[in-house]
Length: 220
Image 1 (cartoon, rainbow, N blue to C red):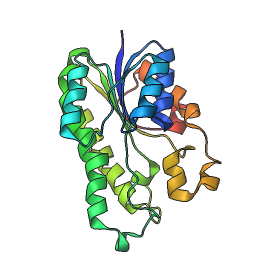
Image 2 (cartoon, rainbow, N blue to C red; image 1 turned 45 degrees about the horizontal axis):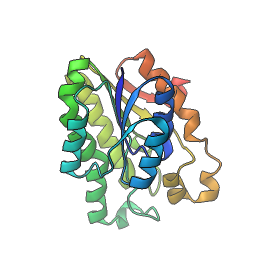
Image 3 (cartoon, one colour; image 1 turned 135 degrees about the vertical axis):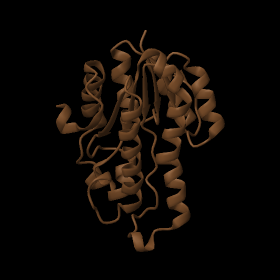
Image 4 (cartoon, one colour; image 1 turned 180 degrees about the vertical axis):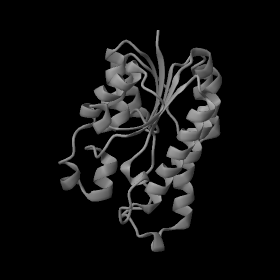
């Protein structure tokens, strides 16, 4: 039995990926802050639901205890930061601190917590990033900085944990609530659904491609 832990799994890309992995025979442990949506998703997929915030150390400990055998960690849970998206000159520093806690510190801390389980199975870590990590988009400085930090953590982790596969993935724009919050529902409605990206990620996992940065285009 292949075991995966997915954060931010109650909607968007996390839910779409969980659905595809369930079809592929994986046993899933899912977490997200929205307990009701998470319970509905887990019930439909036959998964284990552990609601909570990955920025909470006690919650990360619960997750690690729940997955003593782990083949895949997906760090998908993410915050957007200040909205409407502000210029860096106006970015509220307390919001940036919280964003870094959610998008950088929490994924690293959860990875640390489950590393013993991943090492035993020579598993994989998938960190969901963004093109905002490598491109300069006005208004996206806070979010982009957090994803750039996550990518560098991923890169170094891949160098240090050579028995693991470590991927950092830019899935491109997707029709999600986060994108709607950032650019408006009308423009976000023109983006592809997460369901179109999730099968490509399952292909990446099953082929166990080399550690590194991947994009939706590179996986197609």
